[in-house]
Image 1 (spheres, rainbow, N blue to C red):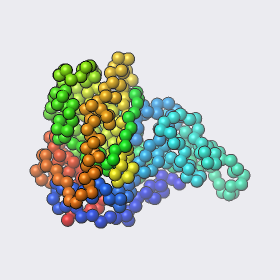
Image 2: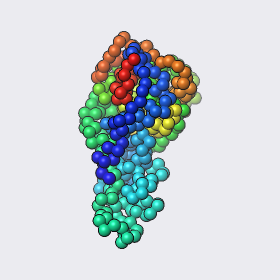
Image 3: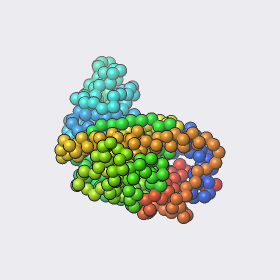
Image 4: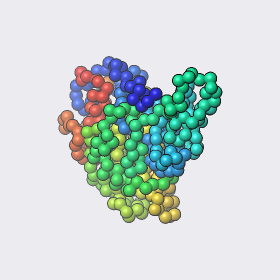
Length: 400
């Protein structure tokens, strides 16, 4: 099966779901957070639709034969660093009987062998051989049974994939996000430090619906550490990527931490910053203090979202800077970081209340209908509404 055939099988153009969307621009129906039928159409139109999905950084699979398993929606995906240096993204499924090829999250293998019938593929996805081919049909050709490759693109080491040939080119799709990604990642020459992984009891849209408004209000560490409330900007692109950016001067030692160095800013190669690039639908590039972080969000059910936090250093970091980034990354902004700990609890509480009747309504910075691309005040909730409008149109929901 080639990529076009595989994408066609995922399109689901005829799938529809009935939902009454409020007429008021600032309101969103709670139903979208828990309905199974809505979730199924989201998979078809968004995750298997005309969107690029950030899947990894080259630093996660730096050597030929390295691989990583992941998901786009509920589709199992295999990313392989080929022996030719090229990184490819495959359907994690044998071309024979559809068996999942790899189950561990990362590894290295010179060949990819299916455990069921021992079909063997090389790191470029070509079928090398299969037992018993003498009994196969006469028209069997190995060349026709390579792994199904998705369309891929790379930017600053970030690996993207899409199921659709009709998805816009990566440069157009990323658009204005590129300058913010460069602020966060530098030249893209990174080294993987490790992961934190968590399952949130929440819908994937609640996980991605975070805003700059909540930070100093929800997170106790903002107040205890007296982190400066720096001004910044929020930018929404026409493909509904949301960027929050602010220069972030160092905080003051309030005595709350026994070792204040964990929140120090030591990287002098870039201005102190808080950069969050939220790619639609559910992945993030984050630079906060000296933390270089990628976040991957995976819908698991209408009320479940799995999130992977990957942490990186720069290849040129010395041993002390490496240790500093590890300490910051593991302590500050992960699923149990002392700056971001409360996020998971709020995600769960949003989901717990989603089954009640009515709508949610956004207020901060909302003055009426706005459209992307646009530049907003950093703490405004209006950027969330642009993304909700983009989502509503993709799903085909009519306003009441």
